[in-house]
Length: 120
Image (cartoon, rainbow, N blue to C red; front, side, top):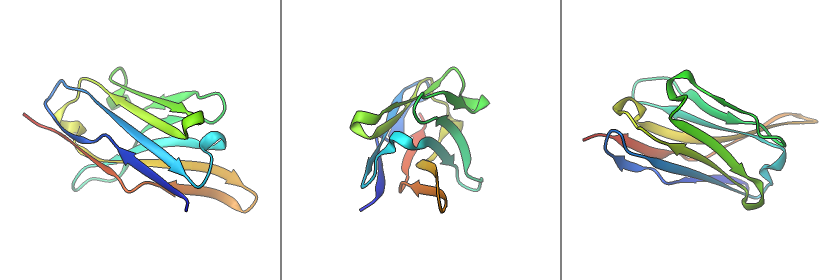
């Protein structure tokens, strides 16, 4: 069964840290670009971080630069999002996404989401 499973979300105080994990099963992430998106209540889903396949160049949204880091560990079929100096506006459901080009078009896999709440 092909799936992405996020973990590591929860409730944290402003200024705190969390690390999200996204473990893939049923396929290898090695050839996939991996992304973290988030969606806050009443807002559109937005791209937070991206890490390329095979080389791992990264891109971060301006709102999280200097605070968040995306890494991947292909041997464990897992991608991570380290979130430091968290702010209340980081509160959202965070989704993991794997994307790759195939002969039939673009292949996309999504996780079920992990809630992150930043509040005192």
